[in-house]
Image (cartoon, rainbow, N blue to C red; front, side, top):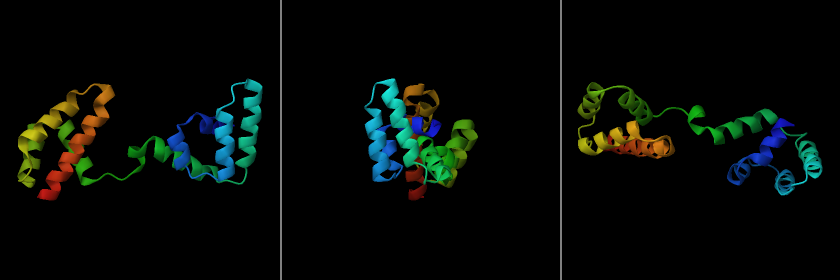
Length: 141
């Protein structure tokens, strides 16, 4: 029941990425449009009927991967360096620059400062920019 409710509340983009059968996808999309509580309960029952033959554990894992991709994927070297640089200080920054001599020192310093002081709304964007710059520096050598 709870998983059926989750399916009607997640975003359309995540719903499409779950790779559901066409029939289940149609029932979920139809149920989303229903506003009457009684009719919506009927729609949820239909969703549960369509889900009977599915592996719910696998569906939950796919949904978790979509909702929180960073918790499931393996860390890359750039992710490790980003964490070290954010948690550490000048010594880690100097170590990174010594290892990757072609890195743009000032640009990385600015991105690091932005990632540390970014408000919650733009934190992901700042972290992504820093990670991308670290990847670029690491590929340049």
